[in-house]
Image (cartoon, rainbow, N blue to C red; front, side, top):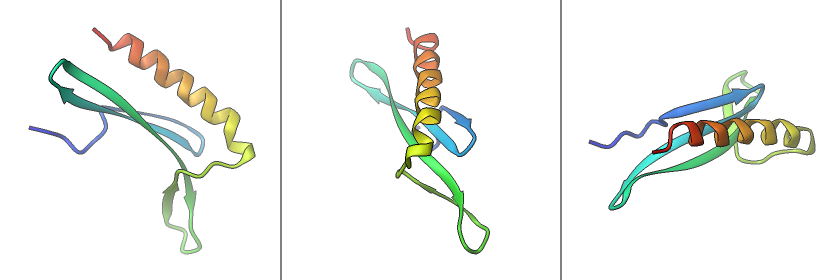
Length: 75
């Protein structure tokens, strides 16, 4: 059975990383998507993969946490 949900998410402020697990012939492999959350003009939450200059440092910190999580959960 495959899941369409990430196995883990890390969020700091508006920056969120989702960690996905994919089963391969050699065992599970992980991939990561990075997004920025924002509210649209109707006050509804949306996400984009576009980052501005002010988002970059926070994105680096989120990716560092993702890197640590992946190493802690690898075989």
